[in-house]
Amino acid sequence: MDRRSDELGRGRRGDPRTLCRRVSCGVHRLCGVGASAFALPSWHQYGRVRDTGAGCLGLNGSDRRGGCAGVIKVVVLDFDGVLVESADVKTEAFAQLFSKHHAHHDAIRHYHLRHAGISRHVKIRHIVTAILGEPADERRFEDLAERFRVLVEKQVAAAPVVRGAREFLSAAQGRYHLYVASGTPEPELRRLTGRHGLSSSFVEVYGSPTTKPTLLRRIAAAEAVPVQGMVMVGDGESDRDAADETGVPFVARVTGPGPLASCRWQVRDLSELQAAIDQIDAA
Image 1 (cartoon, helix red, strand yellow):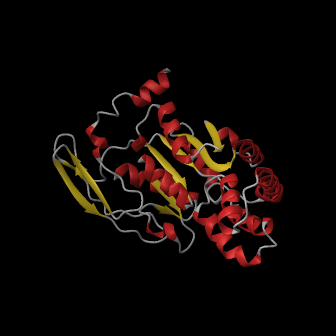
Image 2: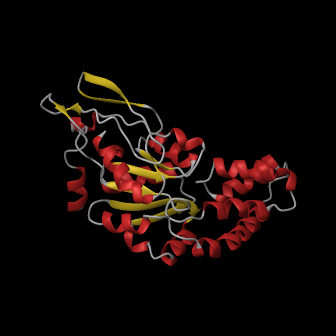
Image 3: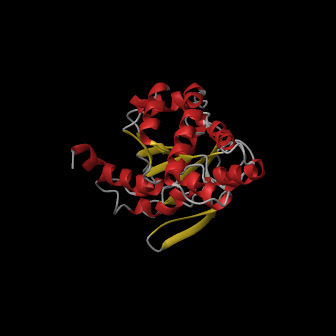
């Protein structure tokens, strides 16, 4: 283990300040040290990160306004819809890919949006076999995946970066270790990250076929930090689910009504992300 990883990991796992349990999309948190634990409600005002400001017990038993000491060292970001405004490009690409199946377009869109952060290969297989009811054909799946890549890669490369993304990535250097975890195939993801001029901001850029829960665990192990020392930023239910499965605090990018509107930590764009991380650190 190198010196940096040793410094990141030392003293964290046994630190009672990490006893604050963060719930990604809940309305309560449990804070405390040892047997002294209590539930605290929180409320969200749409478009603005907000918390009650109630404190956690300090290490000497005193109340600490602003919560337990900050532990966030690693920030993991989804790509489409979080770093780049490309989520709609891929939604429409699935409709184009199955353009002859108009009767199934609503079901295809719904399935894609519910599983926005997973591999396109998994989605294509499900659409063909479960939605269209057609037999599995590996060669056809590969052909459809390549056609999808052709449909989306140039459009994603031309899509604008999310407001506040460049500023956050610049300000975060030296403060956090940054990673990308996306459902986009990894070679394509690396090309797109490079074409947007973002590659140098990240320790690693990870894509499919590795799943997001596996990626989050891999990053935590590589950085020698507990999952409470990380934040996952996503715009899809699969991002939230991966964070919930691994215990990583989750920040949802929410731009309108939808299933992530109940998540505790929300931002409209990345200009609000640092404030959200600060709130998690203080929770």
